[in-house]
Length: 212
Image 1 (cartoon, rainbow, N blue to C red):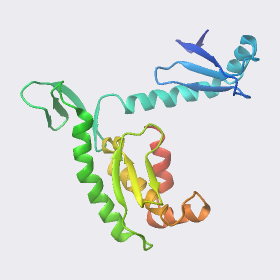
Image 2 (tube, rainbow, N blue to C red):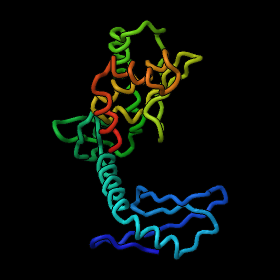
Image 3 (cartoon, helix red, strand yellow):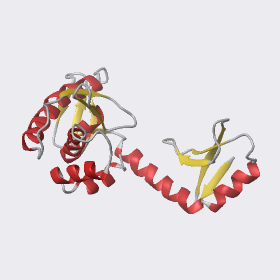
């Protein structure tokens, strides 16, 4: 199945699952329109559903295009660099270019940078945090669905390695978010009040981060 929107044709992928009671539509990274439904939904019903939600699908396509643009290429602390492949070094940052050896382990380089930068920002935010909390352990790892995690029991916060690619204001927001969980281990109104107390513009940052 295919869907034409304006002048572009998008492949439609139908996935049927026993556990699905409802039908869901999403746009994947490769711009495939994925329809997840149950075994009793006919192709005709799916086609009708897609047609009825064409405007919503357009918005999802636009959102995914922005996400793809924001994740294609080399990013560091919110700046995108043009990649120039070289053999004389592992990595070197210029004004607008990054000189990169194809053999370098980029995640390893990012993690080394992140350990230093994340720790500095954690220290700064911890010392000006509005509540008294235990100083947490810091872990960094690549995550696909979360920017950060707080283990209240072990007093450990884990920050997504991908944050090293973004402006530090987003790193700061995630740190404030996870530190706030050391007071409220939930997402109650009191929790969000505490986040706002320490970062008044958090709503703006949360919205912007949906484009990554």
